[in-house]
Image (tube, rainbow, N blue to C red; front, side):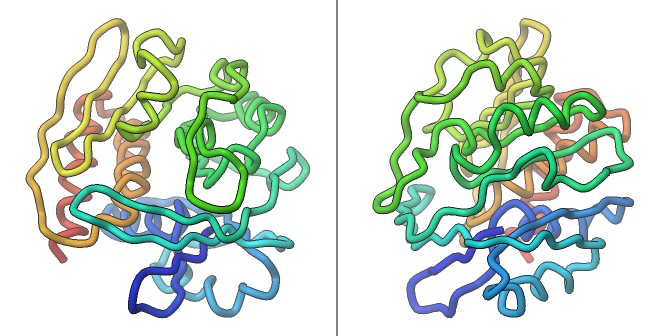
Length: 245
């Protein structure tokens, strides 16, 4: 979970748990959210996620990932004001499901050992923020100083354009399914040695969380039996409905 600071607005809950829950509210499928923030921030941030209707399990933390965020069209500027906790295998409760989507906010949050432990029992979807976001305060910085062994345990990798530029050719990462999102232009699905572009319709609304909603919706589609491209098309429609609301 993140604490997002947008110009002219009070602090609000963000990150994969919040924006994923928004998508799950549209899809109405059985799911569970496991999230974490500092104990001191629980009362301010957690209710916003709980109200969205998907069952939530909160893990007590010592810190909350905090970002100052501003937009110029699709271009986002972020200032890291606090880093979130690191998840160890012992921090993750037992999960009875086929798929798990992990949405880190920096590279320090989900180390390889924790992802490897998850992958022994689940198909793991992973947000590329957890590869390339340097765990430091100040202007958000991306680099390629990540453990590439982590990718061996990932079934689906979601990357934004700027993250794909850092990690290299998506087709050569050794991940079964790679999704590269292009903001309002759409996304590209890499799977089985092929790639397919999925177009999207531009909507003039705040796009914060669109990538999280897309990844969540994609995994719901894959779990329901959709092909990778079919799941991406469905996810694109879900994100459009959220932005247009």
